[in-house]
Length: 357
DNA sequence: AACCAACACAACCGCCCAACA
DNA sequence: ATGTTGGGCGGTTGTGTTGGT
Image 1: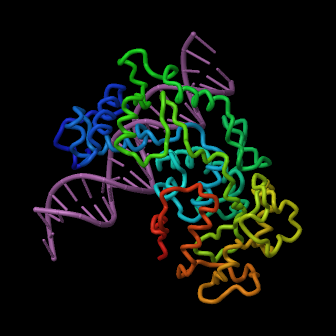
Image 2 (image 1 turned 180 degrees about the vertical axis):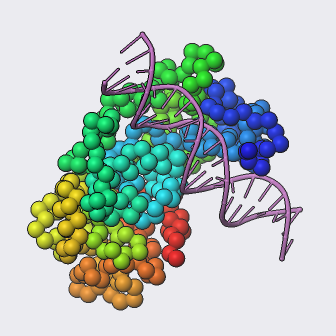
């Protein structure tokens, strides 16, 4: 098999060697990639153009951010995934320095399981009915998906830290000889990076000595503050974002105005729902849900049903039930997704590429 | 120490779409 | 209008690693 773009030529497959990376980096930093199908030939590589493109985009680009996903990034992935679904490339655009492949892998290997363990359907972000929730026996898994723990608890895993350290310190990971076929990490040199920087003067990312650091570090920015609470609106075509105050947000009303509270729910404002038994949450679906209306909705007098206006700065859940017809103010949606400037390169919501049909 | 299962993630596959001849 | 090509993307696979027995 193989792609039509490279079916005629003899191409190498599998992991990339340091020498191959070196050639590819040298080619792109000095000449740019241009037509990807011509890159292998120009770089002296026996790879298909697509493979070169993938290698560059996912691993060799100097503006990549490596290492574990932060809690904030995980929240972002979940929140954007709730809107866009498995559109990894679009989701990755909300995570500077992350690739679609990385986001996809992280979702499939980590977030998905956590959501399921929390009684949430990873596809719809709605509650699973009790009989849909798998019985997770911690004894059968390396990972302990304790449903009594919050969804977001991924960081500071010693083993992953070790991996990160290896990634960021090539001396720990680079093979001692070219015969080491396990090599799969960038080998861009500072010289290469300087070349790339010179040819990409708009880059605001800093690269030195194999260590990717950001001049504009997003790690200290405030969170999006979106709740992971699933909506109890079964008719909702597009799940609704619920901007909610977060423990890490200094201002609990930073992103929204509390319009109506969950009845009898004491953990409002914690930001991310602490886990309860799935049965309890399933019962909760029958209750009138809390709605936290973003201040921007109120300011804009946005009618979430499409057409009218929110009166008196108040709305209710009955009004916010559906995105059918896609009457949502897309411009606002973008703004709501970018409350703290953590997203880059999003000039318009076209890039969100909603499928409103 | 050896084996095995589960995991993590790099890489590939196949499809879609836009541009172009 | 049609066929070809290249780029992009999501889904899937392959393989090395890790941890438990």
